[in-house]
Image 1 (tube, rainbow, N blue to C red):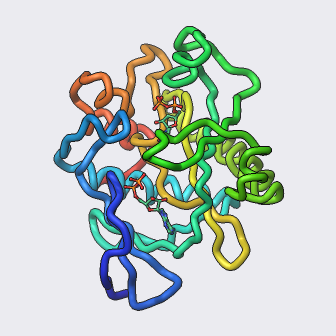
Image 2 (cartoon, rainbow, N blue to C red):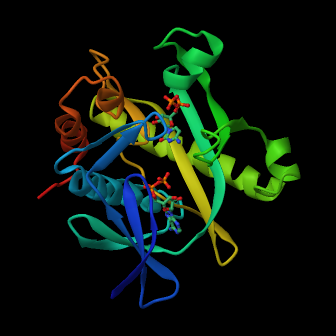
Length: 237
Ligand code: ADP
Ligand code: CDP
């Protein structure tokens, strides 16, 4: 697989064409951003840690029958994925209240959400990823009702698989964001699953092991990502 020109440089990853028109290379960089890019820092080893973390999770999801874009690792910081036509809608599931939900609805952090909630956001940096719903997504053409229904099923399926995986390592999967895309008419999970796009708390102490350490300036960000990885069986060698 040969890397060709850059297609897109995002906030945390760069995307490259390859010699296969159906495949891209995702390069995980050390760049870390929060608050719509207002807080930025390069955290040493993050690209490698997230690339390997993501590969491990995508493998677990594939084993459980969730179709993903992931093909394989090509270096410490890069992987090959199927080129998707991304659907510009972010799917968020919350098992425990935190972050935006607490701010928006005045709910105390840590409240259990049963059943888990499902929210949709428009992927649009200039508009700060506003919350949308199925009706807006359909009418404004972001996704069809069938696509939205499938994305919802898959997002809940991911919750079942990953809640159990993290629980076995003594970690609570608090919430997470997924992105999907189309590959030859099939909806596949795209982008990444790493501690950059979810919340993970120690089940006993509720210590944060995710990007909130960066958002809140708690330090030890990458050490926390590695600790989660170690507990669930990710190898960073
Ligand atoms: P952002 O765009 O939010 O700054 P990243 O830095 O993570 O995010 O950039 C990666 C970009 O690649 C995202 O816009 C994501 O939607 C897109 N992407 C992820 N997986 C695929 C894929 N399989 N095919 C096409 N685009 C993808
Ligand atoms: O905390 P914040 O206000 O950014 O967002 P949230 O709605 O509480 O986010 C819910 C979950 O989705 C968290 O795990 C975020 O890390 C993740 N998320 C993300 O990765 N990217 C976004 N654009 C939005 C949310």
